[in-house]
Length: 368
Image (cartoon, rainbow, N blue to C red; front, side, top):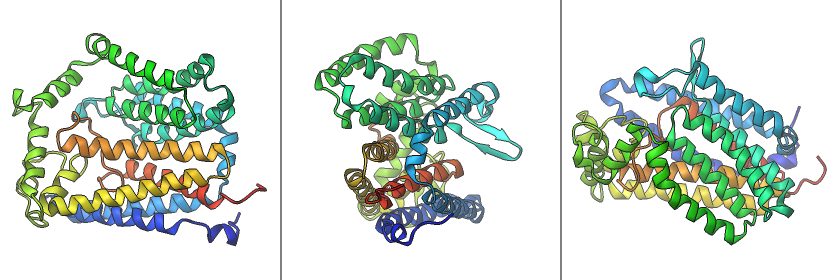
């Protein structure tokens, strides 16, 4: 098994460089956030996760992405079986209030992170196969039904944030595929109608509490609103230049919860200020623009839809995490791509990057 030299030359090294810069920022911020917890252990784990992710990228580059398109049905079935396994054998209720993880021996991972990738591959292929009839209600209904299966399974865990991620990249992919504007309008209307229905029929009490405390964290400042209040204080404390690494008040004195995972951006904003946060956001913007350009240059529609789905997935996590930390969205427990501490999340995002690079390096290859 080998990669042709001409394909190696077409690897988008600038995209890899941008992502590695983001990862380096993540390592630095994790070392600061966990300084009082024995940061060496956290840094070693994070660096190991990055190396594992880069290894996964190399492996992915050996496989022509069109091969994944041919295996879209087994990939979809396997992704949903993982989610079913979580409902049957999942762990995490005692510590995090939801069974979202699977434990196999000494390995614990979150299957929904990998299911996102599998479902995006499936949707890219099925949209490609049905792009000529996208405006027919039967075709659209079929695509949405396939997307709804993993969403229902994830909502049952329950994991509202990841369910929202699925909805975001699914709608993004069919919109890019040329969905008629009348369906977009209808979706908006249905969305507005579904809000009260979801409130009274589907949302758990803790999810309702998240929304209420999002609107007014002071309703429960030492309970449900604590995370949001401390995060906003941390971001505000940073002002323009920040307080300096290892000098954040909210992070270093233990006021900010989940500071190395969900609220790592709050640590960065407090210690590096608006300037540091702006640099990170700029790097994210460059990364997403590069991904969009790769989608535009893809040799086929399947590759384009695949990259678009992965880009929407990454964009959702970036926006949701930053918006959560500054009070623009409820606390959903979504980590920040390539920055937050966590092996499964880092690996899944690296795999997504590998798939994007795969499409790019084969954009001019005809025979495969």
